[in-house]
Length: 128
Image 1: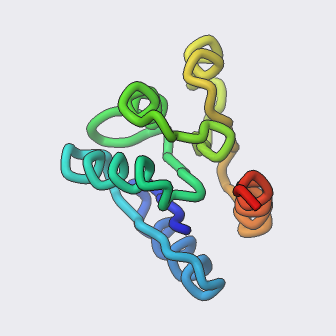
Image 2 (image 1 turned 30 degrees about the vertical axis):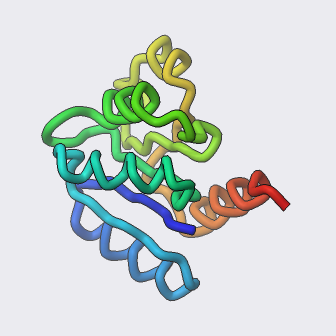
């Protein structure tokens, strides 16, 4: 199963990528959700290859919440219980839109233990 991480901060991408790959996970890391990236993510979600989706809120092209809203409208198999918006400033995230989209919010800095917890919750939901 794959973990998808969209984050414009290089150091965070590198740390999470190294950590998760050392734990045996496949991780796709992107700096922004351009058309090519979204097409690949949609394919992975629809083929049920994606276990966890982590999206930074503040991104260059569109914010993370808009990205998840787009994926929600496009992907019938997107599991919003395993989809997280990551932000340093939770107050910037529109609570009504967050509720409407249905994903979870995690405040940065997100620790490796929190990532492990997200993965644990996501794997519990896998069909046995």
